[in-house]
Picture (cartoon, rainbow, N blue to C red):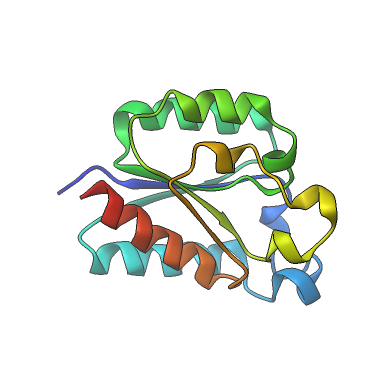
Length: 145
């Protein structure tokens, strides 16, 4: 069995289902984690799903992934637009990174159109709600093989 795929989510995603459902939908983060687990299992992988509102915690998990993961799926949320710390941690990885967003940042405010994560990600999946995570897990599994 390969190492797990880390599925990491940034700030405010713990409030999915109630936070701006017109943008982010009605699924909870637990619902999305179950989708990720099912998709990963069908591809012969497991997932480690985590969420934090704290930038340093996300950096710690990315550093941990260097040794313990096959790939990383990261929804950096607002930190994607601001965090050089996440970028620097991701640059240390030798495993695939797939950036993921529930909404389509390119169709939103101009400050959301650029992320630091995109500079190092193999690809970006966005705009498909919770299915963005499933598609990102599928891409990560394919890249990790």
